[in-house]
Amino acid sequence: MKEKEEIERKTEVEAASEQTATSSTPPMGFKVILREFKKDKVALFALGVLALLLATVIVWYIRLDSSEVMQVDILRNFAEPADFSWSLVADAWNGEKSLVLGADEYGRDVFMQLFLAAGNSIVIAVAVTSIIAFIGITLGLISGYYGGAVDNVVMRVTDFVMTLPTTMIIIVFLVVVPEYTIPSFIFIMSIFAWTGYTRIVRSKALAESRLDYISASKTMGTPAWKIILGELLPNLTSLITVQLILSYAGNIGLETGLTFLGFGLPDQTPSLGRLVSAATTPFNLENRPWVWLPASTLILVLMLCINYVGQALKRSTDAKQRLG
Image 1 (cartoon, rainbow, N blue to C red):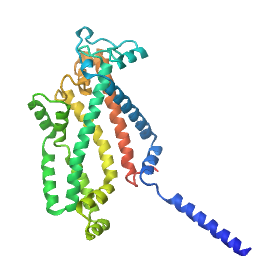
Image 2: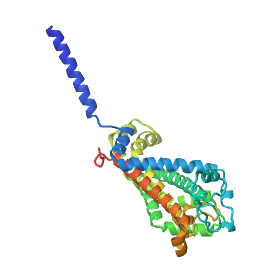
Image 3: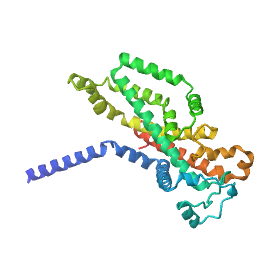
Image 4: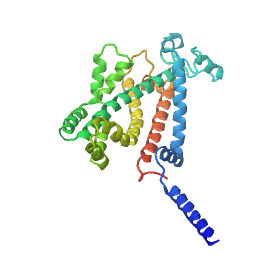
């Protein structure tokens, strides 16, 4: 009997210790992000709104024909919005000018332009962010891993590019190029925007490269590219992910800002910045809000949602800033 009681006590103690260890183990990876969003209701709501907006914009962007939407119809110059009905939305889905949100100065449907313009902004933001992230992360990893002379050369070039008036140079390029399209616009925007990634990744990689696991890999004769891609880069993914999310909002703002100033996408390409630019006329600002207000609201909602989601992701990577 005593032996059975001792065995039962040991089993209970082991089960209790396992349960305590499990409960005290901090969440890792995706669980940290999920827990952070559960604690921050605003960020969770922003994530839902952002996902819904992106899905809606992508579906309409694929469906609509840009050339048909951008056809000029002077007879519908600044036509007011019609009374809302789902039949009008269905007509717009089929490519017909239903004037759900009215028309602009050239008689083009604002409702359909809104989805095409938002799709263009998202495509440009994703493409520009991907290009500058690839360049910046590559240079940052090389600079941080090797250090020394390599680090000095990379950082001096980065510092030089950072001192340039980037926005003004982009405007000059857009003025000089006679006919540019979305791909060329993406290329021009990506030339100088990689420096931020390089500096952030370089500073973190420089600290990581001095740790024991990197030194052990070097001692074992592991090739440098395997250390950089297989060991150094995975430990920087959280930092890179946060930077990517925040860059999307910045690049959407840059594209719409340049187009608003008249140096962005071509006239026949739908753009949120061009729709917002209608508000520069006092009469339009006061009496024709259907031209500029939907685009302005969409930009505001996109920026806020991306910002809240990015802040939640940023907190999840830092144990000191987490809400739970």
